[in-house]
Amino acid sequence: QVTLVESGGGLVQPGGSLRLSCAASGRDFSINVMAWYRQAPGKQRELVTFITSGGSTNYAGSVKGRFTISRDNGLNTVYLQMNSLKPEDTAVYSCYGNIRTSAGFSGYWGQGTQVTVSS
Image (cartoon, rainbow, N blue to C red; front, side):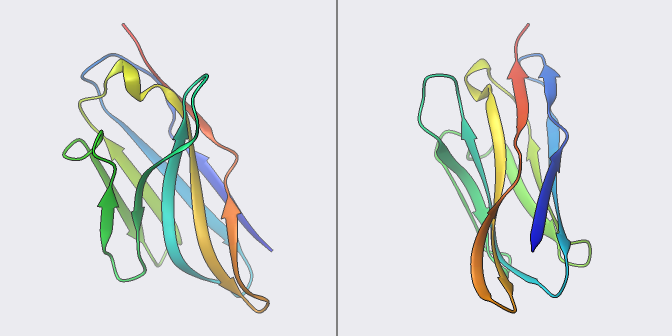
């Protein structure tokens, strides 16, 4: 079993920055793709960005140039650096991992962390 735990959410003013972290823990696992999703009130969950095991990244158009995803394979942690935040970035941000264990590949979700952008 693998657990993902996010941290780093909070309240920030427009134009500000936050960095989210997502740490994976468990036994005998390796991480394939890690991603960040977000869900704003009354809206569907959307994919924000993902990073492959080789370090390739992809971003939603709404965050490209403002958000940066990175990973530390030694710490089994993925980060989301969010700059130039806008009120429309307000959402619950959740990390997702496609992770290999002895049982094969499975998807795992973190518990989510609230990001609120407001003056």
